[in-house]
Length: 328
Image 1 (cartoon, rainbow, N blue to C red):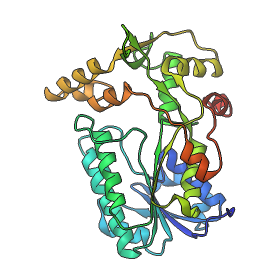
Image 2 (tube, rainbow, N blue to C red):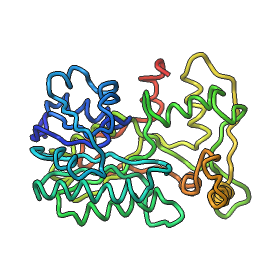
Image 3 (cartoon, rainbow, N blue to C red):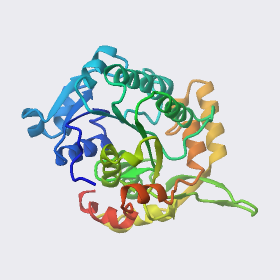
């Protein structure tokens, strides 16, 4: 396995997002040039390597996945494309269907028109599948089908919840633990009914470190064995949601007050979100129906295929958290 990817120029959508920034940085470390699709050049200059933009190692390509001309310009002359664009919740101007499904169709078509053999890597998510009640889960699944049918040499990566400095998930949990975000007095999560027993329990999670996610995405470009494969990617430490909150509290400074973790049954949350949406009040809740459904399930993986094809074991949650806890 070589230290550098053989591709010299990589097109990246979603480059200015949390995961995208780390992937771009790793591509630069490997000696690649990056062409980044960005809605805002101003934001791109704020979050990406300014020196790399100035010296041309990063080329900014203004536009969105809805703009065929921007996508043609993005992929023209590139050796590979990494598609990271996604939303976790719909807004007035962006639906899951538009971003995940239509966006994937548009970028794969642009890649195929320029080079039918362009290497292509897609960001999906752990636990996606057909589910009309959970728009995020369902459209990510359908986007995967689009990739498989594209004719491109593809790889699909399905990360668990990604943690790291500057990440949305990490920031939200740290604010909860510190009591700086509602509900302030306790830390919320979705619970589920115990199978074959009475009462509720917390689902398990194995958060994956953002540096490991970036490593898998970039390394997949030069490992032929990854072509045509899906990879579930999680951290190597599995723990119930309340225990994860305790780990955050243990390592951030100053030490926060102890706040209990309280689970809302996922099916209660799902019905609440569905009713709120039907009466036009869905945005008043901090979650939608799909979040509640997925929140009641384990989000873990044994990483067997990652270990076999990439030759490393993803970091444990607590060990990787300690490397950046002083920045929280």
